[in-house]
Image (cartoon, rainbow, N blue to C red; front, side, top):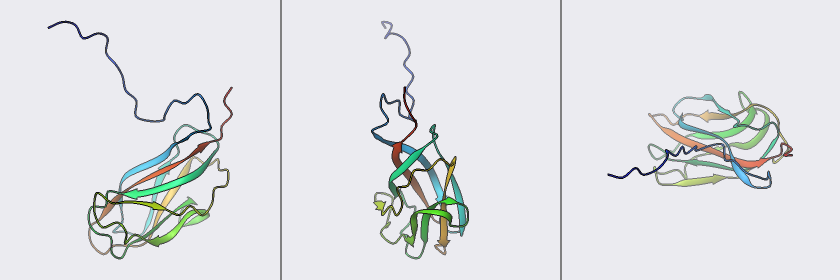
Length: 140
């Protein structure tokens, strides 16, 4: 077999952009427990200043009939509400994607966001969270 060439490394995130005028992944978390109230930390990826434009909940392990969740800048649903605690009933299975209404697009600089589960599902359940937005860090 012939040599296929040099090895290639593929990096998933953060996206390397030549401009900060593109929406990119700011934070994500796989397997948020929605059967327990409280917070899951979403570390912000490689930026000092950002504005959230989209929050997506997806890949529910079961139909989320009773759980409520939101995204905030501080623990315990504190700070700025990016996405208010709201019913997750649209997440009926793993293939459903729910784009949440973003309540604040203010410029932020904190190192973390927090998914707050305000009401638990009542049975074992998880979901994935993706936060997209603008990297407002100055690029030379």
